[in-house]
Length: 420
Ligand SMILES: Cc1ncc(COP(=O)(O)O)c(C=O)c1O
Image 1 (cartoon, rainbow, N blue to C red):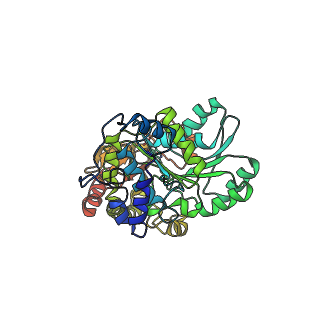
Image 2 (cartoon, rainbow, N blue to C red):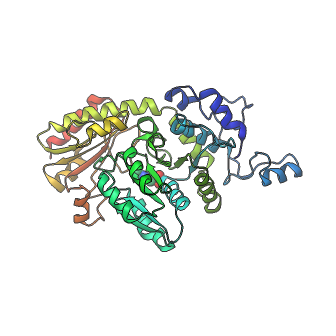
Image 3 (tube, rainbow, N blue to C red):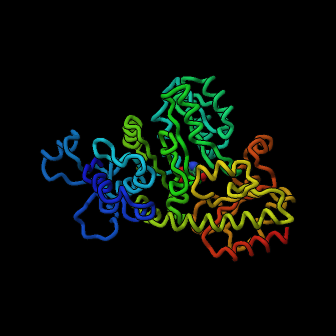
C-alpha cells in the first residue's frame, strides 16, 4: 500500500496535465513501474510474497513500503486511488507528505460514506447531515450510527441561513455532510459559502461532500474549502453499470489515517477486479460526461416546453432557482434530469411502461439512459408528507441521461409522453 514511488511518479508526470490526460494516465503503472503490461493488471492475489524474513518484518513495521495482504493494500487498488487523487486533488496537492496518496478506495459508496463519518465522529459526537441525501445515508445515521452514540441533526444545506443556525446550535459538531446536486430535485449547495459559515463557528468541523452526481470533472469540493470528498464509483466514475464501489479523497492526514484504519479493521476494501473495472471506466469520464451533459440539457429544454410536463428540475435551465450558483460552481450541469408530470402518480407509472430505449431501473450514471419513478419505486417507503417536503411529488420522474444519440432519446420521450 505505502508505495512511495507511486505517488511521486504520478506527481512528476501528470501534475501539469489537463483533466482528460490525468484520467487516462495518472495512476497507471504506479505500483509496478517495471511491468511491460500496457494497462494496469488485475493483481488477483490475496497475499504478497516477502523476499526475506527481514523484509517482511520491515514492511510490517512500516520501515519500507510493500504489499502484505489485499485487504490492507493491493497494486490494482492503488492504481485507482492514485488516478482519482490526480483528478480530485491535483489542483491542490497531489501527494501526502510521506508520499502516500490521499485517496482511498472502498467496496461501495456506502462503505466510503460510513468510513468518512466514522473517521470524523465518535460516541457522544454530533454530525450535521443534509436533509435530502441518499436513503441509505440517512438510514446509516438515524438507525445505525445512532446506536453507537453518534447524534445526527438534519439541515437543509442549500439554505445557508439554516446552515448558520444549525452550526450555531451545535457548535461542537464534528462534521457536516451533504450532496450537491441533490437527488432527485437537483438542489445546489454553495460549497464555498457553506465552508466559510461552518469553519467560522467551528474550524474543526469537517466538511464532507458526496460528489457522486457531479463527479470531479464538473465539481471539485476540495478546491472550494471542503475537507473530504467522496463518490459512489458505482455511478459516473465506473460509468458502465458493471461494478459497485466508492472512493474518498481528503487533504487531512488525520482523516486519511482514520479511513485507512476503517478499511483495515472493518474490511471495506474493494476487490482487485472491482478496482480494475472502475479504473478502466474512469479513463473515459471526461468524454462521457461531456456527452451526458449535452444530452441532458437538450432533454431538459425539450421537456420544459412539453404540454404534459408541469415542471423540469435541471440546474442548467435558467428557470432553475440556483442556475447562477450552478454556473459558478460546476463546469457543466450533469446528466440527471427530473420532471413532474401533470397526470401525477398514474401518469408516472404509465410513462415507465411505455418508454423505449430508457431502461427502467434505479441507479444512475451509466452510459445508457435509465428512468425511474421515485413515488412508486425508490421513495415508495417514505411517508407521502415527507416525500412532498423533499419535493418528490407523485408525478415526479427521474432520468439518468445516457450517451445515446440525442435525437433517439428525445423521440423516445416524446412517443412515451403521447400515451400518458
Ligand atoms: C448520491 C449517492 N451517494 C451514495 C450512494 C451509495 O452508493 P453505493 O450504492 O455504491 O453504495 C448512492 C447510491 O445510489 C448515491 O446516489
